[in-house]
Image 1: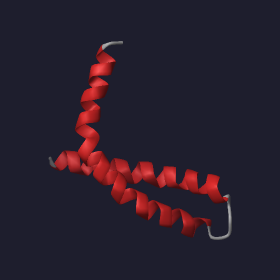
Image 2: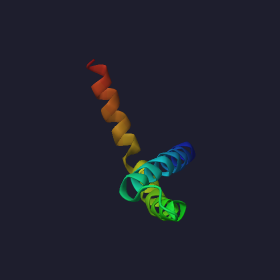
Image 3: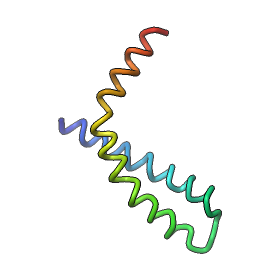
Image 4: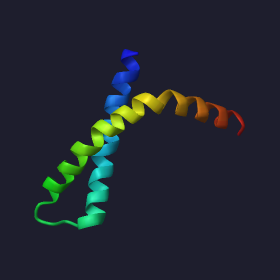
Length: 71
């Protein structure tokens, strides 16, 4: 359980950090307060992604194992 929680925390941190930068850039471009806009988006996205990763990670892992076994 500790490993699963830590994995969800770190994976969601890394993924949302880069994805929020990309989406912020697409939406507003490189404006003067880009970093502020990006960090606002990231701080909202990270907790949600962490919870989603923790809750749905095992189900998604089982699904991918099933799908991969068919190829």
